Amino acid sequence: MDRYRIRPGKKFKLDEFSPDETGDFEGKKQKGIEKFETFRSEIDKLQEVMYSENKHRLLIVFQAMDGGGKDGTIRAVFDGVNPQGVKVASFKTPSAEELSHDYLWRIHAKTPKKGEIVIFNRSHYEDVLVVRVHNLVPKDVWKKRYQQINNFEKQLAEEGTTILKFFLHISLDEQKERFMERLDVPEKNWKFNAGDLEERKLWSEYMKAFEEAIAKTSTEWAPWYVVPANRNWFRNMVVSSVIAETMKSLKMEYPKPDIDVDLMKKLLADS
Image 1 (cartoon, rainbow, N blue to C red):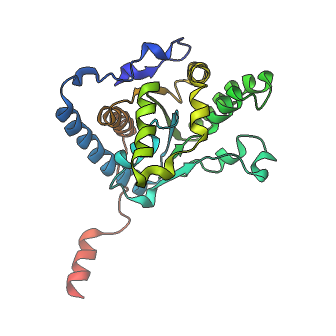
Image 2 (spheres, rainbow, N blue to C red; image 1 turned 90 degrees about the vertical axis):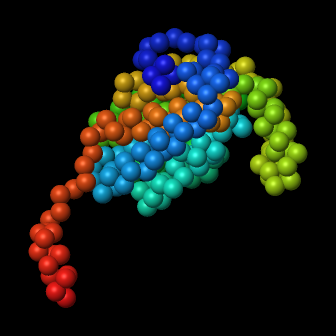
């Protein structure tokens, strides 16, 4: 799935990526679903090793427009994974206390510890996306944040955190369909926010903000992946494949026991 990775310094346009794309799995949905199940099973096993080894940290960032599928992706990819070693952090509008600190303060507090996977549902990137589109801070302030974010993520990486960032790319029409479903299905009415209609009017401004943020902060130590996300099954497969392959590259191992296993077996049998 390397085709979806944005290389450092590469200029790109989001319209070069079709949200409907299914890559080599065009017309092969069932095969794609089967591949996803394989990757998900690998993630489950690798997470067990990561937790027991207590050496590596993994930070996964999800960003998308409203209705982009962040919650659904997290549920699908990490279904069945031991919750003891996985946490999800969601970042809403900053509280008064959070606003009294620098914008990265609340983010740093949620980063993973050794042996842990932390998933950001939205993240520090809101401070170069929403604040830009809605003019919440001056341009000369949010412009500086690209480098600040790069420095922050590099520090995390140098301290042993592996970072993966995913932009779930849906189309404006697909968002409309998903919003309509939230209104048509009573059990999903609660998910619809009237403010979403106003945000839709700013779609082009958000696309520009995402393009610049991704281009300026996709680094070797914290790469961005632009994931075609109109098709949930393909989105899940791409995300899970990147996570599984990244975790395998860490060459993790279960820790060596500090006991004489054979002796313990004998003592237990005789007890």
